[in-house]
Amino acid sequence: MNILVIGSGGREHTLAWKLAQSPLADKLYAIPGNPGMADVAECVSGISITDNDALVKFALEKEIGLAVVGPEVPLTNGAVDAFSAAGIPAFGPTKAAAEIEGSKAFSKNLMKKYGIPTAKYEVFTDAASARAYVEQEGAPIVVKADGLAAGKGVIVAMTKEEALAAVDEIMEDRHFGTAGSRVVIEEFMDGEEASLLSFADGTTVVPMISSQDHKRAYDGDKGPNTGGMGTYAPAPVMTPEMVKRATEEILKPAVAAMAKEGRPYKGCLYAGLMITKEGPKVVEFNARFGDPETQVVLPLLKSDLAAIMLACANGTLAEQKIEWSDGAAVCVVLASGGYPVSYQKGYEIKGLDEAKAAGDIVFHAGTALKDGKIVTAGGRVLNVVGQAPTIKEAVDKAYEGIKKISFTDAFYRNDIAHRALARLK
Ligand code: AMP
Ligand code: GLY
Image (tube, rainbow, N blue to C red):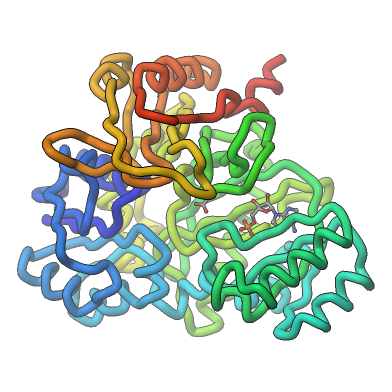
């Protein structure tokens, strides 16, 4: 079967890399893909990932038997609906189901209605009421832009002044554009965060191996929030007991709720969790694989990803056997100096082959090919993944690899997996 992957980041490179290992896979295509993905897929330029008609036309021409939609933008734009209407099996939620990520207000209301544990919250469409609520609740408190803001529209305010300033920035100054026409203001949850991705087919949901992201730009969880600077899997905070609770209290009720609402959820349902004293609570749902969680989760998947994805698309997930390796994986993101604020592009990247020779898997996140050379083309440039029997060895392997790669102003965090390593002491 021919497989199409939509997207161009490290997550999509990982998806394509894993799908290429499937015995079901014949030819892989990526729209638009990236220079790293070109190792396993034919990258196709000139088709916009939000042009559903063009995506479907391409898929029909190439006799695609499975279309995998990576990023949230084409998902919330209805790419999966378009593939399905044309009879092409597609992995990912429909436009209506992707609303679970596309609108924080929708997802918070869903959780309230179905009793899924999450922070208490209120939604506001005018700044004056939002400010009054902050005055009433006090700090710490969390202020979020409602729409998609590339993971950056969230301000965890430790003081009331900070929270009031956040309301102004989002609603009056529109720092996140139209995503700021509504704000969600919610209770601060104290605990350790973890990501629990899952496969869903509309009725059945199966958790993947747990992982933990590092969202702040700098060591010690300092600096601005980013899309994610590194991950590891599994996350020790997600004990088998905690995974079970999260599955029973969060994943299963969420998939059942979406079905009841007439928006059956198929694809990857990503639960961003806070492990609080009372148990797991939802920070956010995402309608897609995490980036860079995917980079550590999929290398540990022993089963055939293409078969699982097809089963999600056609509602037979319960029949799939999904097995995970015993070891650990660690991903360190190599970023452009200045990310996530402003950064240069076009710097030549050296040492990619040396990193691979050190045993690492190197996924491309923001690279481009220019005059036969691989150059930087984004904020998060590369994802260096070490896989090993233990988390400590996986950390060492990832850092050994990343040290071999260089480009102007490159930076990375030196403390990925610090919480897991601290538990070993
Ligand atoms: P989100 O985009 O909703 O995942 O939020 C980004 C980050 O802000 C999360 O990964 C958390 O670190 C933090 N955060 C969001 N909501 C809360 C909350 N209610 N309590 C504490 N931290 C939060
Ligand atoms: N790594 C966080 C996300 O994918 O949303």
